[in-house]
Length: 461
Ligand code: UD1
Ligand code: CA
Image 1: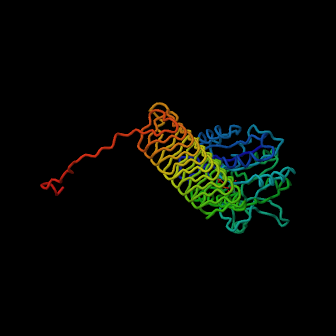
Image 2: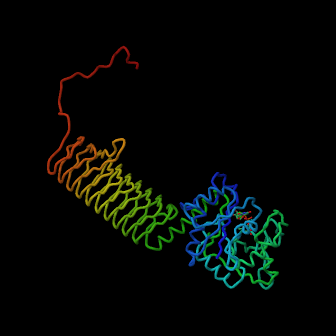
Image 3: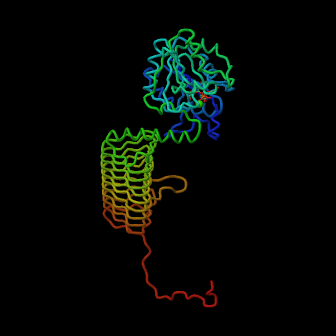
C-alpha cells in the first residue's frame, strides 16, 4: 500500500514559526499521531508512508528522521493544490497497490476507520471518508445522483446555493487503486475559483469512468477534524483528552473531573486508581490499583505500585515507586529514583538517582541525590547529600536503621553504618560507624553580653 500524507501547507493561521503539523496535540506533534495510526495497520512493516512537505519542510524532515526514520518525504515547492500535492507524493511509488491519502493536520484519524476505508478500496473502488455535519461551511460537499451514487465533490468556494445546502462533507481522506488515481490525477485542471489542482476532482472523473465510488464514515466525529488555528487545536485537545479520560473511567478509574486531566502519552491504570484535578501525565506512566494522585501533580515516565498515595503538587519523573508509599505534598522525585514499599517522602524533598529502602522516611526539606538509603532509615529535616564537588558526582550510602539528625550535610562519597545516629547539624565528611552517635558541631557556649543599643541621634533611620 502507498500512503501519502499531505503536510505542505503553510498553516498561516497558526501564527507560528513552527510548521503546523509539528504543533503538539496530547504531547505529540500532529503528524506523529497520523503516522502512529498508520503504524497500527496490519501490514505496517511493509508500508513506507510518504509525507509531502513544503512550508517548513526542513523542520518536518528533521522530525521524521528522528522519530519515523522509515518515512519518505516528497517536496512540493509550490502549493498548487491537494491534487498537485498527491502527485508529488506518488512519485516513485508502486502502482499495483492501493493508495491512502491522509493529512498531517487531521491528527486524530483512528486506525479502525482507516481499516474500514481500505477494506472498501480493496474491491478496486474509490473509497471516500465522508461525514454528515450540522454546519458544512468550508468543506467540499458530496454530490450524489438520484440513485444515491456519488458523482462529484464541489468545494465551498465553487458551490452554488443548492450545493451549499448539502450536509454530507468530504473529510479529504480517501483510498483507491493507485493506477486509477494516477490516471485521474493526470487529467485534473486548475480551472476553479482558487486556481488549484483539486484532488477532489478525481471523483467526477471516476464517476464518468463508471468506477464505483463508495463512502464510509468515521467512528468518532473528532477523528476528521482538521486544525487550522490555535483555537481549533486547543478545542481538539480537550475533545481528545475527554476521550482518553472516558477510557480510564470505563476501566474503573476515578477521575474527579474528566475535564481537568491531561494525558500527554500513555497512562495505564488498574481499577480503583484515584486521580484528583489538574494532573498532567507525560510519556509512559503506569498506576497500579489503589494508587491515589492528589491535585496538580505532574507525573512522567514512571510506575507507581498499588496503594501508594501521592499528595498535591508533586512532580515525579523517571521514577519507580513501590507499594503503599506516601509521597508529597510538594515532593520532587527525579530520574533514577527507586522508592521501596512504605517509604514516606514529604514536602519539599527532592530525590534523584537514589534507592530508598523499605519503610524509610524523609518527611521534610531534604535533598537525596546519588544515594543508597537502606531500610527503616529516618532522615531529618534539612538533610542534604552533597553529591557534587564541582566536577564529579559521588555517592552517599546510608545503611539500614540509621537516624540522620536534622540539618545534616553528607559530603559524598560517604557512608553511614547500620543503626548509626548522626547528630543534628553535622557535616559528615568521613564515614560514620554503625551503632554509634557521630556528631560534628562546635561546642555550645553561653557568654554574658550586652545587646547593642540603638543610636538615638539617628533614630529617624
Ligand atoms: C480540502 C478538500 C475539501 C475537504 C477539506 C477537508 C480539496 C480540493 N478540498 O479542502 O473537499 O472538505 O479538505 O478538510 O482537496 N496541501 C498541500 N499542498 C497543497 C495544498 C494543500 O500539502 O498544495 C495540504 C494542506 O497542508 C492541508 C491539506 O492539504 O493539510 C488540505 O488542504 P487545504 O488547502 O486546507 O484544503 P481545503 O480547502 O481545506
Ligand atoms: Ca483545510
